[in-house]
Figure 1 (cartoon, one colour):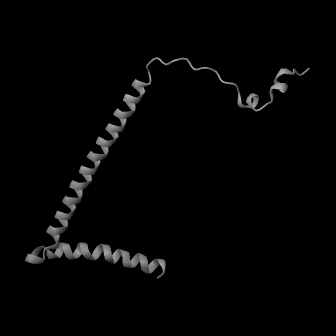
Figure 2: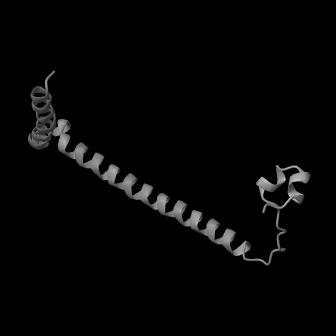
Figure 3: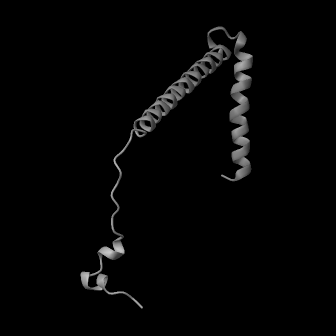
Length: 100
């Protein structure tokens, strides 16, 4: 299928249901306009609900980070300094010699 036929088929599949739903308002039990509106309202409901859940999760994450940063501000014991890895890998005989 080439790009132009895909584009044409896509436009037909978008426009045809809209036209059918518009003209089906007078068809009684086959009224697609009402079901499309109900589907849209349900989608809007779930979208708003998920945005609310997202904000709650982001707020909980921020609270967790805030409590971590407050607990890390407690006074800590001074850390001892360690020797660099390059000095630890040398033999004790080389450490005693000085370079001129």
